[in-house]
Length: 368
Image (cartoon, rainbow, N blue to C red; front, side):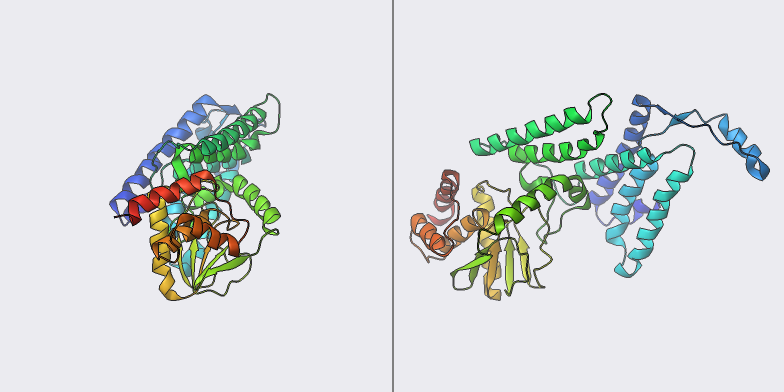
């Protein structure tokens, strides 16, 4: 399967990234073993019978070190990521079952323990996340003081969790998972933007991003559930356009513009026209991002009733609707656009950075 995986890639980028992932996996497993050569805590069982002599010969080359992280598990994850999108849905049960057996087989060897499976999966996810196939990393330092302040909070939380995880004699090493998740969110607010969630226009996040950032997503979901009860699910802003929160119930609309970056497409959105324009929570978009979102809304509008939503429907989605109202000449000023939206959804949040973003967008895209 390792060899076949190099021949099922359908683009040059997919092949190059996959090959690089496999190379990095071998280096990472070797470095991990050399830096942390864990010793076995139990005696090797005696091998006798028909295969006893063969095992005795192998023992001459087998040092009493536990090989963590497991290269088998790292490769298992990386190969599954390549085979899954190229496998017909009717055969995926066989793919999942076969890879599950490969994962279980690691625990039947003398060289590996359960900790090797956990560390191997963690390393594999880090590699696939850092080397994405369908997205790119772009660093653009944020000039928004509010974004830098949020990044500072997340950096601090990640540091605290890392210290606790590495505390001598503690059993909190699993805290490295949320520490890495919060570190990536901090980098998102510092300059990587919504790319940290690796969400495409169809509303799908990469499996690596979903797994790595799961601790943050769980926290964000708990916050969303707490605050969402204070607001209407959606409100009619103008004919054909609804503004609302992330759907937790089936919505009767003809199209959806999704502005969230932290979650996948809601399972309550029916099979309608859909476009995702991921944006980080609480931040104002750039002029280019705002223009892309307005164009997406224009593309969806002919389908009929359109729901524009973010998490709570208060800022990310609201600023897009405001810009769209201006472009469609349904209002004559930014202040009027804000007033129209606020009348329908009173608790929208337009900070000074949102208004500045709207002004810059108007000067660039509306004023000839």
